[in-house]
Image (cartoon, rainbow, N blue to C red; front, side, top):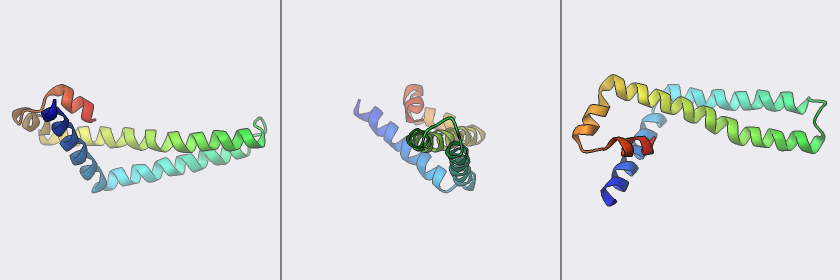
Length: 105
């Protein structure tokens, strides 16, 4: 169990470091923030939601859309880059199991 947790932790740290240095990932984070601002503007102008309802809906949107959008783009990009470079084969040779790799994503 200890080895599995070390493997998962190492994979998560590696993925986060790869994502932080990648301009595509950073741009997807900005796109998620812009999308949230756009949706928030539409919600604020909605006549069907009351003042408190619109503010609550905008807050929930801001807290869910950006992480969901950014996280999805990050994972898809990282997985595509790993496949291109054959990282999955290297990880398999190093003893990383498929469940460990899946859990780290």
